[in-house]
Figure 1 (tube, one colour):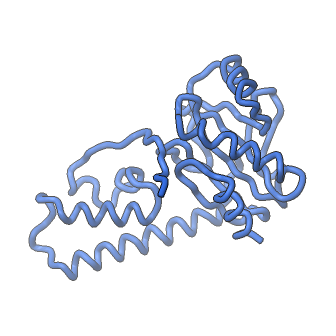
Figure 2: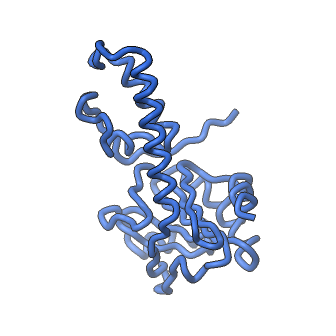
Length: 211
């Protein structure tokens, strides 16, 4: 079975007591499952509190998972205003594509798994842009527009790509790894987050989940 890869942007080692319940701990792992696994690993550390019993630890993990689930569900309902100018100067906004699934893909030219998924994204965009889905790329790195344009021409990428410096941040959320994709539902009522490279099979599964 092929292992999915992604490139971490900022992983920091911090003491157990300072990272408990912190956003830093959540940023260190992608998704709710990863966060719960992180908590489980933390309990096996020698600096975890020995006076806590097994039952208390299980309740703690369950409570943390429930909180993370509620937070993610609440965030999914609030679709932020996101958009900007592509490499050719044309404006693109999520609202322009209402009625279609939008794949907002954050990537960089230096990221091997990002380059690996670009042909899949391009093929999906070409097959669905006139029907039910589009891809909106976001180049997330410090690179000149001329160098980016040359890269896109060389890779024959024709879906819109918005240049964005990491220091700018993003209205969709904090990017902790590349590639990261935000899958916006056609009615723009919810967003799903996919960390790691996407395949055509993944994209079709997301598309069917909204139908």
